[in-house]
Image (tube, rainbow, N blue to C red; front, side, top):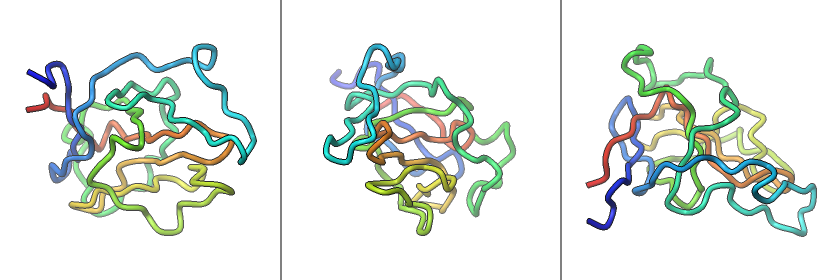
Length: 150
């Protein structure tokens, strides 16, 4: 079985698949991995290796008060909680939220969720990738669910 131990992340509201098969690992710490630099000359690498995800060690970076259509489910229905970190290349089924992609060299993530579910429009995540940040996607654990990969 090629994807044994892998999971897919989906929108808890409509079931749209939001990731390729990924496996859970512990997140890298600042001391273990690259430290973000304020330099547009040196592109920021992804924080998470392709094919992996981790629980965000800094939960709450996504403004939860900005729930749009498709995300009206109660807390018990909205997923397992605990925001998830993924490599941007592992994210599928999302669209950019216009007006929230600001930053000098890429999205800085200061304007609230900037990724919406392509299926229902729920504001499911935050793409961060400015020149002084990790390149990462943070998915709102209250609005996504995880299931074993087929």
